[in-house]
Image (cartoon, rainbow over all chains, first blue to last red; front, side):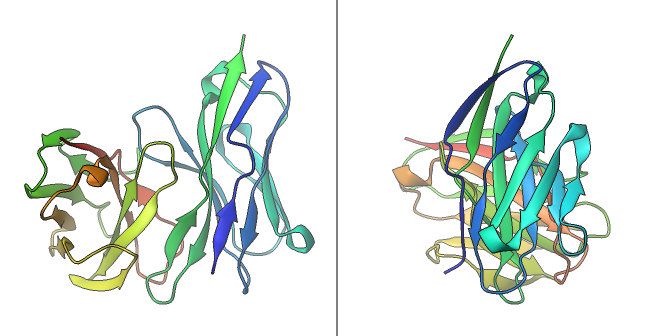
Length: 114
Length: 113
């Protein structure tokens, strides 16, 4: 069955430090991958997506992610974290037939220290 | 702003009651999906509607049902509420069922007592 694993439940970084959030997927075909961010009490905002082509994709708010097929990974990175980046981050993969629904990981909660 | 709106923002019900949650999709989007997000977990796919017909369903019982209307609005109905139905319910729309990118609304937080 298709699945997404986010190994880190909670990550704490200092403001200005670099960030990497891990995501591993299990999917037989070419995956369509997403990163979403959720602030407390809010819906999901799309950060970036990978469908094909260049394996390093740029997103909003200075985030980027790299698709590595050999490692079945799609890790999210940011060179310098801002306090406003504190939120929960979800990795997701498109699954299903005609429905093309999203299967999400369990999320990584990011805390940013001043 | 994704252009997807949901109402109400919060709702409290008691076990056994029925609830209707509403979503207005982004203009021009003919496909809407509903997701349930329990506390501390990622969203889980409930079902998808395409042109007013159910197009796919996740692992949810039949007491979860939906409707989609021609004006880009949709509903999620849950009958015989259980305590475990307490969650954030998210709707997401996309331009067409073959598209991959979904845009999420802010969600409705449901508490079942």
